[in-house]
Image (cartoon, rainbow, N blue to C red):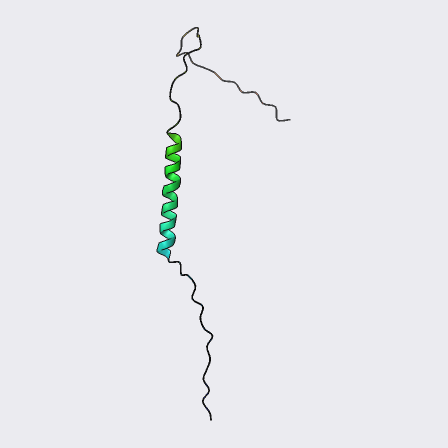
Length: 71
């Protein structure tokens, strides 16, 4: 009996993405989004509007009644 060699197909080695790399990218994305949110909230004005004339107690209770027609 003659011995035959088995031919194996060459394995294609592509880029390997490790779980550590996926975690690092996820953490970086979370930090970037958090930084953008924090920086966008810093530009909100905090001044009170007091240019309108008022009559009565400024600390009086306020009742808001909402009417809606969903028909």
